Image (cartoon, rainbow, N blue to C red; front, side, top):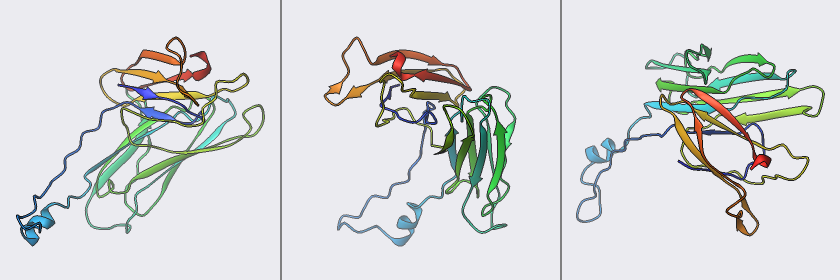
Length: 220
């Protein structure tokens, strides 16, 4: 697996679980039209499961973070489903557990120990399921408001506008929501293409199952 940077924000996650998907395809008839209306209908499948990963919000002890999760739709609509976001650690307890579509659910966390989150939604709560976090730091070097949307897991990412210049502290957060260890490669590209072979590359970074690892890009 490869993670390729550039990256700008500390609150960016690169999730490493491989996603699998199933698609139903309908072959067209010889004249280029769908075989029949029934076959065309069968090609449209509902979303049955959604996965998300959220980065660890801040390294500041005075950070205040709000998590919000939402599935669009009418409250108390047809069908049942479940959703939850929990810490990216083994035996973690749920942070958010939405119960129905159409109603946002929130939670808060304080300090630098707030973990990265992983989550899944199925059934009626899966289509369009989203989550985000907003972090406020009131004083110090990190003073400001940070926000990021949780993202679907994957195995290859690009992040733009990174800088490893003196005074910059750009991190990449590697989160593995899977039950098996993940191996990550990070490569940095500049205005003229890939960095030199002896710089800007970190290969074979191990991320244990249900865990997060943070890499300061200037150390590469």
